[in-house]
Image 1 (cartoon, rainbow over the protein chains, first blue to last red):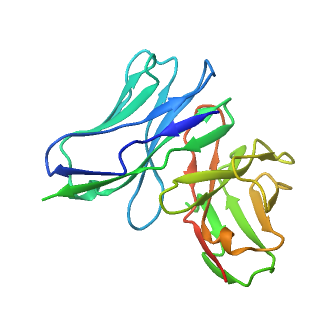
Image 2: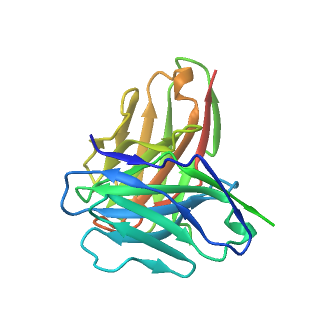
Image 3: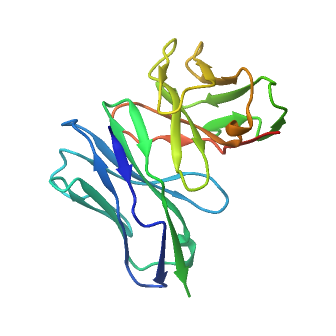
Length: 113
Length: 112
């Protein structure tokens, strides 16, 4: 079965420090995509970053980077220089067969001042 | 810049009632999705569509039906609502392939 696992229900980080949010996935597909979304307390879903399974370099978008380890089937999100506004739920998602986007259970990140 | 619009934003139903949630997108996206979000379970895919006139089942399709008669609209129907369908429902759309999905603001549905 295709499955996305986020093992950290909650994480705390001090403002200005870096934090890594874990994500592992299980797929037999050769070609797939990996996404991270942020959901603040207001409820909207905000796209952060994307990694393709054949991309040779790890994706980066501003303070967000994706630590992609294909052999281990992991796609961890790294947030550098955390800000108070980064406090939110973070979801990892995988696109299977180019059609079907599935999400993990999420990690609640709290940034401490 | 409307993006993805869900109607209604809130609804309370009695057990056994029916209703339809409407999702409309103005980005000419081929792919559309319906998810439900429950505490501690993330987003679970109900149904999705890869183009006008097509639909497919996701992880949790039971108790729901969908239709995609027009490219810009994706309707989610509950024929006989149950308390277990109390949730926040999100619609999303994408160009397809390996592109990000854009989400609506969500619909909070309570079935009593």
